[in-house]
Length: 196
Image 1 (spheres, rainbow, N blue to C red):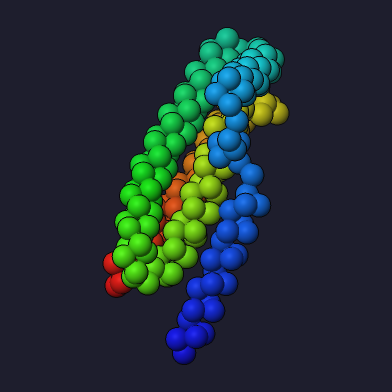
Image 2: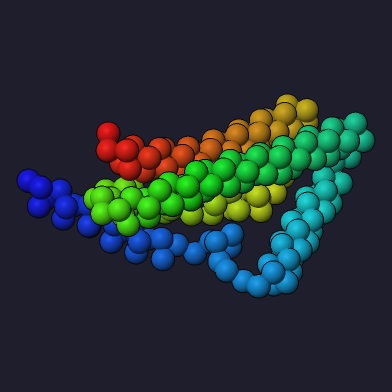
């Protein structure tokens, strides 16, 4: 039974490290500082261009009041998306800090001769979950939500707004679930280290 447990832990560790190395995320790649800044600026420019294109599409609405409301709503959704992405990025950074402290404790315990295989496997899993969360946040931050205008009646515009709002809400919930999974994986690493 003990042998099966060790084999299972080793398999999880190997799969987790393989998944972590296969995971490519723009936020986890190591590039020189200048290139990272250029990449961020390029992403900001692309995002700004997408937003400008969305604003141009809103110009097709003939009623000035409806156009102004649609522009305000689109701007609010974009601002909320930026705010949520920044918040979730900060949360993931905190989670990474906790994981870093656990890794330090695991290293110390390992040098003392304690068995930390389960904790190391849990840490590998947590790293994969954190990478997934970072990737989801980066993808979400790059999205621009635009209200698709098919008909210019008030009811049709309201329906399109509600559809866009629901899409935004669903996307944010999905990203939040990824962050929650990363947090839970770190919690499991802590539990594995403490032997509970």
